[in-house]
Length: 596
Image (tube, rainbow, N blue to C red):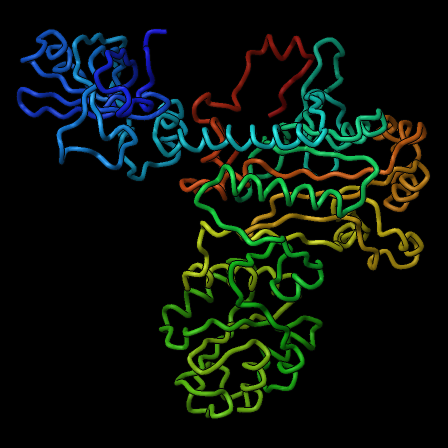
């Protein structure tokens, strides 16, 4: 190699050694005769001193150096003079006195400062992603990703798992999101699809006798742009035979604890992971991915609202909706402007508005008077009703009651996000503290109001609870799935289930969902056929790698910060200018015509 040691590996043990370094100019400081260069490579940064009294030639080279130039430096490692050490650098006790220097490649002035931690427009960062990846923030994120994935592989290998790669080009079998389609040149008019997940493939591997399979899998979904999503993402895909839910949940809990304690240093976590039922978390948090780092639980106050003279409150219940609320501790003094901001927040999440009741003063709740109640609906409430609401949500004088009325789904969505917002505002969301939890007992089906039919709540290979097959035709909304999610700090990290492994049962569920015999054979014939050849009971889970890394990194605002070359939130690639047009000749080869 051109270099004999890496920049970040030089320490006191190397004092007196002659070394050759190569890397990028991170910073340059000219102190008259002395020129200091912070030289950076993938391992870190070391200070290089160019002293004309020791060697003129390298000093002359140093005078020309600028940020991000690639240079080769040969010199002696010396201890820094007492008082000049840099405790912020791993190499801060030493420096290299240059005896020779060579410019390997100059650099144009970068569009942003690589050495700075200052804010840079994300679109500019992605346009110059090869430069953005040089920053300490992004470089460390990618190294963390490598360490986490390696730890996962070693962990599963030690427990008898076999890593198997599955195809990227498969058949289109839409199971939720749209498929990305790939035209076949050899078979005109025919298409491959990119897998949304290896779901059927991993089940086929169970039939094939690989009882413990995993893969760091690439998954593709042609979804409309939304939130913290990417058209392609990476997941740990995992499947096991002859297991039940506890086998899978126990394994994943052990894996995540191991990652946090051995790789993601500086993070704390709660163990063992709590197990929460879907109905309970929806009632208490309004979402199936609650942030459990803080309380602020929701409470249903519909029965109290119905007794009030407030049309906003009782009218919602009479119309078939609900009223729920939460207590924001110590927030009774919020200004009108702050209350308007909270109202606008829930309106942007679909709610019609926000009802607030400030309980001013202090002391016990039983001494509260109506003079301490500040609310636009105060004249429609009695003191007993206010106290009853406060008791229900756990509020005391000094707190602020926040209530939303309307359809259950709208109320839960708005209040769950308002709860998270208040958690942030009140400083209750320490990013270094991780609270994982399993959510279980999900509904097997969701009712599609527009289509007037039942749809799989997850995917159609999920098994119902063992004793609930009899409800399929009589009361499908009551069926609970053998499904489980892993959540942490308000994010869903993993989703999985025990699968249906008997063909007759799988076909029965498909027929209930409206599939014809022809559609079943066309879309899922490969899996249905395999289930007839001794398919073992099996189940699995698919933890998302990108979302986990976002939680484990100190410098990630979104999943885009832990992916080397991501797409924007609108699914575009500013670096490669993709998606892009292709020559007509290429389309002709594929027998494709673009219709504008």
